[in-house]
Image 1: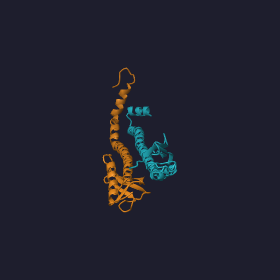
Image 2: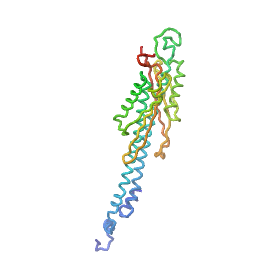
Image 3: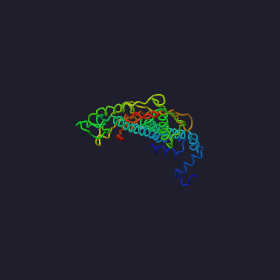
Image 4: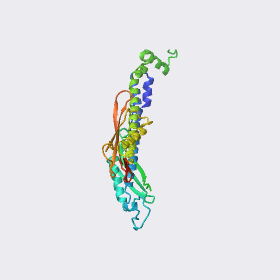
Length: 157
Length: 160
């Protein structure tokens, strides 16, 4: 196409500008697509991160009430009172995290994982969803965004 | 410019002859006419980039505002001001030029009590101005869960 364009240009024919514009339009359109779809992908990534972080916080709200009162949830013995997401409150924590994702992520989002780590003090949630591209549809129709975020509970004494 | 040997003149000579017939410079003229079109397209590319960038920054501002309320120990106007400040700080120096952004909180801590098992949604709205003409209203919302075991100050009372 470039060779054809160069030949036409050499002959100095009328209408060569139209051909020039046609050639120029391809990279310009590609640039436009990259800017818009790339920007959209970045925003989706941010949205996934925010949704995961917020879901982790929602989960971390579920302290075991016994541990809060200073009772070991497993043995019933006295322990230092603190917020812990124990095996008893983890299902609730992950249900809350899942509900939070519904509010902050697109409808096709789902929770990839939800776990409690670091001696029952950290809730880690990962979120994944797909977005559709508008202009880069030829190369890739769907983009998958994923983010994993954690929330740690602190107990002020 | 013809040669005496009777051979065909070289290509560059024929080319120059063609241009001399009055088509010389037509490419430049046509390009000058089309330049605004190309320029307008470039401006469109820049505006598209600015729009998506503004969307990202508004998303971040909504997140910060919602979090400022959900973690706040105060209620009423103080909680609202904390959200407003968080939004303004998030948008400052972000390169987003959209005049005066507005903040909507649902529920609004100025009119409703923020309970323990509740979420607060912050919506940030602003008009992104295009370079040449027009504007587009962008709006982003983030919901944040209220910290259940935070301490709430209401007047002089501390409710654990």
